[in-house]
Amino acid sequence: MMRALWSAASGMTAQELNVDTIANNLANVNTTGFKKMRVEFQDLMYETLRQPGSVAAEGVQLPTGIQVGLGSRTAATRKVFAQGTFQDTGNALDLVIEKNGFFQVLQPNGQVAYTRAGAFKKDAEGNVVTSDGLPLEPPLVIPSDAAAVSVGSDGTVSVTTAGSDAPSTIGQIQLASFANPAGLINLGHSLLGGTAASGEAVVGTPGMDGLGNITQGVLEMSNVKVVEEMVQMITAQRAYEANSQAIRIADSMLEIANNTRR
Image (cartoon, rainbow, N blue to C red; front, side, top):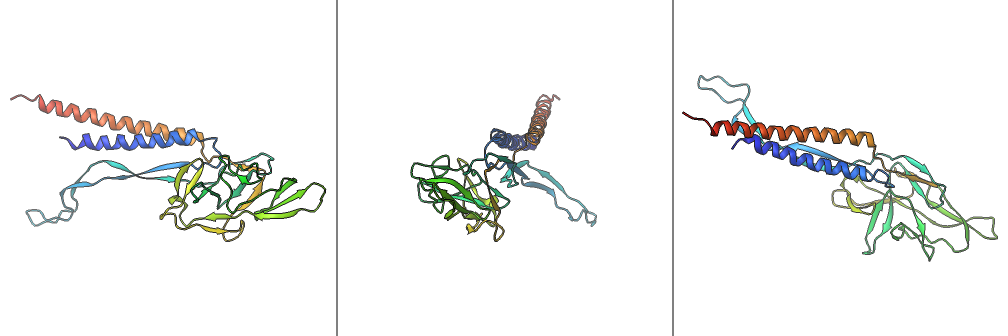
């Protein structure tokens, strides 16, 4: 069986995953805090027919060898943490992180998850929560008589109550950072989870130790650029077509060999 059949088939499989990833990026073009993903490829094993530097029968050392590649595979899907565009909303609980850092939210299982989506709300008890009702970590409770909420660039949260002109501090938002954010795992619902690859979360005050500042009344939109994704999709489609053509050519060569008559 010709190697080209399996090599081209591996290329088609890799491009299928590439298109799946691009489609997911495009589907989340309007998702708050979404970070696009990129597929990374690598070549597979090589069959060595002649070792480079081997000695020929005449005692001459050959400068090159003969190797045949066996295709490609997907090495990784890497999340790109480039800053998304900002959208001014004017909502007091819409927060954005400028540059590095993640908001922390507490999941029902007691584990902390991380997100760049800062579209927070207030529940019936005054807790600041995500759209799915997950509370901010550390917890932040807004008094029921709060007339205005102010969030400073360092995460300090102050409220002004009815009948009072002086704001009072009720808490502070803390951010988390990771040595390798690309090692975080997607949990869905705009949440990320820590892994052994990402390292332990380093929690600190916004604006300090490399963490970004917080801006109130603004949301970070997806960093997906539709034009770039469309170009990537066209490139993946053409690569898929080229590999399918290689399979047709290899099949045609096998047919010629099978039909050979003496």
